[in-house]
Image 1 (cartoon, rainbow, N blue to C red):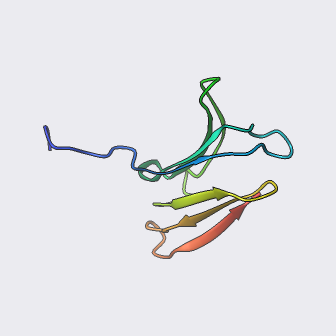
Image 2 (cartoon, rainbow, N blue to C red; image 1 turned 135 degrees about the vertical axis):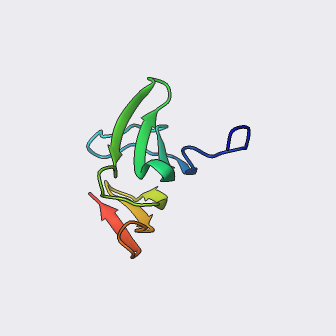
Image 3 (cartoon, rainbow, N blue to C red; image 1 turned 60 degrees about the vertical axis):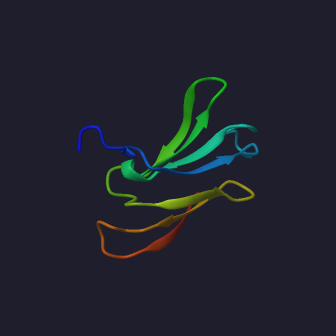
Length: 92
């Protein structure tokens, strides 16, 4: 509704990262979850760049709480709204 508050992106996670072993992201980059876009991404705030992203195109649906795990993977809870089921994914 015009004039009503809204949350277009629904950013539900922001995590400050350690460096990725293969250099995919650097120390101090930020992992974000944009639930309304079905997207998780690593942002380089210093360089104004997207270092990595995943999820759009049917991979995710209403996800929450991605977390970079020690090593090189990202763990994420996918609500699976479009599929009618929830799941936990580990992305390598």
